[in-house]
Length: 209
Image (cartoon, rainbow, N blue to C red):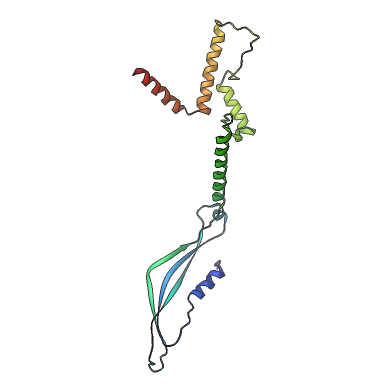
């Protein structure tokens, strides 16, 4: 059941021999196990598939010598031996799966992006990705930014037509809060905070020297 007829036919043909007269022949039998993949979604995706296990026998023929003399009514001498010390296991594998195809597509896309950035440079930083630009994730991101960042927009160009008093404490407080929010945004979404901390420690260490 569920075994390829081509495989069954190949076993029959592999163990079918032409025996000539006046020969002394040794036939050795050995055991094999073939694992066939059961077609289902796991095999198609690339996960560990389910198998049909089919044990079968194989044989090989060796002609040891040619008989030169007839011994009564014996025209051929055939000896059958068992070679069951080892069992060969053959496991069927899929050469192409959905996961492997996605890996190839991802590798090609990464290579194309690297070539583009090498030739034309990098674009503006977009830390939130495509999934956070629409729907629930978009609204959640906006709510989080509004909650933790009090000075929005973070970067606001000054209007040259307006005069600001440098000594105005409220203006100074606003600038300090804006700088702190910018640093918080950069540490959370843009750069690796651990790298910044290590750079600061190394800088302070160099100053002490």
